[in-house]
Image: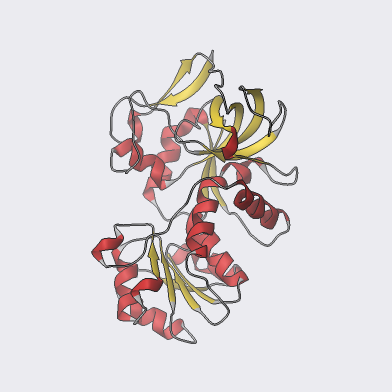
Length: 300
């Protein structure tokens, strides 16, 4: 038998249980991964709450990004072999001893890449990468990133800084120095945001990446940012007639690029905290409380 996280109704974190299941076997095009680490993301609790656009069938697994070791492969899989260290994404069900993953969703994990980082990189990393790519940022831009200490926001902020842009990031009081360490000009979120950004920005803001919601977008519009250069993944973009570009189809080349940037020291993936699978409910409660610095990771 093996362990897996399951929930059979929508609700708070406490609806999740870790139960015994029969180890699954991969179908054509799939690999079975012995899971080592799983990054938690807001989409995970939104799916559990029934507020996500992603479908859920009960009883449902939990978790969408992982890292582990391939221990069985299905028919037609030629890109992987048993024993490969990998990281990637599944539709749902990463939080388990064993996860079935489309082979096309799995990238090779470099030996230098820590398991906890690898387990929290694929979903947040590609979301940040694809979102950032949608705005063709250059050194001429001044970029505002909201929730810049979070899993996606911190990667977007670093990619913008790497492109030579001036980057301003919003975060709470405890994360101001962390943003500064990433080369980001930190500002506090909350009422009066537009005024604080205007005072901090050496030149007018030209691009906004929102991971927080209306407060950021309203500040961006007050600052005169063109709606076509405001990208949100936190809310319905139609409310403000702005853009929404998040993660596209799983892309192994993108995952390879991100892993390489981390290994080369050009991208920092902060790990806020780690939990064992047995403390999964506490891990989600911590995630949902907010004010994080980086990712919450479950070590399986």
